[in-house]
Length: 93
Image (cartoon, rainbow, N blue to C red; front, side):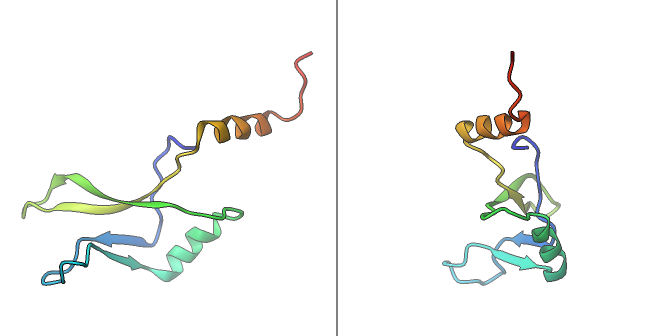
């Protein structure tokens, strides 16, 4: 469902390490076993889009937490097609 927030298990994002070159924009860490298990639940999906986001709340050092979230947005036309498939071939008359 596109309106539900989904966070990929085993995938972690963080800001660049201290003293990283300017061209380094962030860091991704993957706990392989957990992430593979998460991916196995995505059976039949060709693509998985994940956004890297920054939270609103600051910690005691004034830093905001980074996190990853699955982009489940579906084009409205595709959403209608999915809903029609779920209804099946039932005729209204």
